[in-house]
Length: 232
Length: 176
Image (tube, rainbow over all chains, first blue to last red):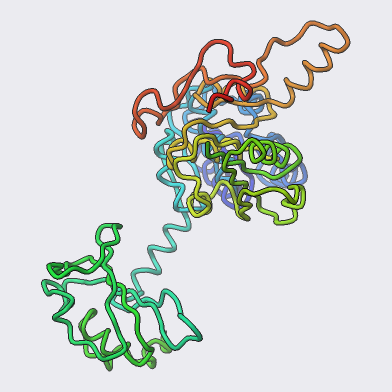
């Protein structure tokens, strides 16, 4: 296969090297001349020391006969433009973009990039497996810190699911103020019934937290003690 | 109308000031707060520090649903991405991206992004001054194609794609 790689950072370098070792034809575009020369010295004269964002140089690299263009620079906007130029200007059948901001994944897909690799998302996914989701989230400290705004996402184990907010047993100085359901904020009404997946917002003194935890998250309040938080 | 300008350089600041004076609501975004020194003291719009290619930044700045979005940073690709974000994710009515590379400018006007190419603009100004034939490129290349995602996110017709004229696109928008 003939692959045009754009971006000669660590990813582009090792990608090109591995592809060549597996017998593929590779051209690498790296705009920094010193870096380009360094890579040429190491893996051979497959490097063009030009900016792959410019249509002219993508053309010179042979994009019009490439099977794949892989845009792996460190800048999302460059990777997007490289893939779009490859796709629409050179009819490259398959474009692959490295994306750093996971929020850009959707846009890139939508604009026609065939494959999106997001290292941030992958690492995030790996970390999130270790983070318990059943915790209270501190959104803000109010005043001098005597009150805090807290969010709790209700899981299926939450004792609050299926109940009305007024049935929650909460200590004095603590109020449940709103529910966010499917990204829509709703005030609490007499007929509101809490559902799994709801994000419940509450305001209270820091010492109300244990009770809130017990009512909204579910496990014994003691388990949410600061000690376990420190252990992480 | 609501106008968003990304990049508070000389052009960005001048445009922001002009729209502001004309009574429009202006949001200007730049990564550097020092860039905002170019705005006059009379400026009443909002100046937001942040990366104009970051969807979160733009959303927080209140870009959603704006009438006009002009991307004027130093980077062609940043402008291209910001303009596409504005069109695709933020429901902006009309965008203009400054793309100094004539090849990319033409390519993106074919992809449905109206582009402003300083290279063509200045070359033509000089050609005209000394009496050489002009390149014939419009100051703002109107979107000649359809933006790939344009129809899925907005109803038809939201994205204005005039195929003729439009040379003085900004002047032509006074009607807003």
